[in-house]
Length: 287
Image 1 (tube, rainbow, N blue to C red):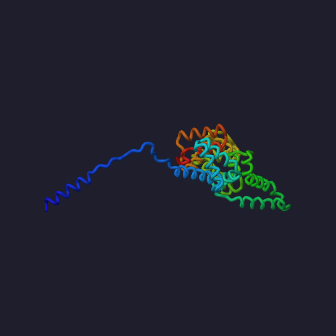
Image 2: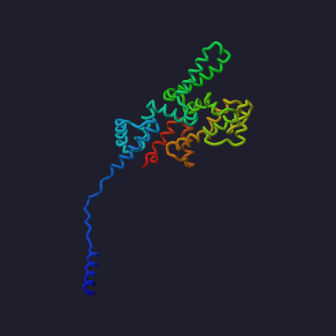
Image 3: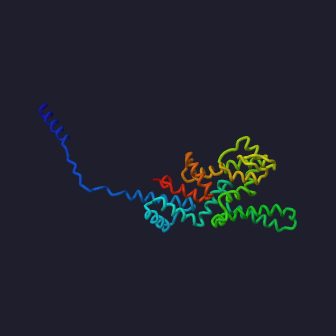
């Protein structure tokens, strides 16, 4: 019995150790995975449409964009061409305005703006309110400026600074941040993405009280001066870069990115160019 078991073990061992030859067939390479490449392109197109226009592309738009990108092998030039095409769409300016209403006006809808405009237009026509007409005229000018933002930006009549200025210089923003101190804090938080220092807050309040003061290394003595100083500060440029990175890449820029992209925005004053520089990155594409 032991002899039979030993013999079987030997047979099993020999069978387990049998060697197989692997034959290599020359030129038999696996084809590239076009499915993954196609999925990446489609995802990129969808992200651009949703991020810039607030909507997904139609089947025809998706196919046109795909052909454009594939013709350029998905290089940065083809990506930039697609981004520029989307920025020519009227929906782009409306979506950009929607982002700013969300960030600066707590997602105020355009219907509310129109409703306020109609209300003050009616009051302005009443002879009994004649002493209030100058104030109503101011409100109406601010509201009209808000309503005209998408068309004015699309036509190039206003830049990003003016778009945001209109969003903070109106009765809605004042109601959200009543009082000089609250207004100053809101400006720092909304446009510079940080809280003011104790000195910055005191100087801001002083300036808006029509006293000479220094904010962000600039001298002024009015509310208008304060607003102008904030919008034309280096801190504002950095915050805009951070906002674009956070919105599209979901992260803060590295130090070298913050410096180079801030310089780009400062030198060009072109918010679209800033967006394009981020939207054509491999990181945004997902490769």
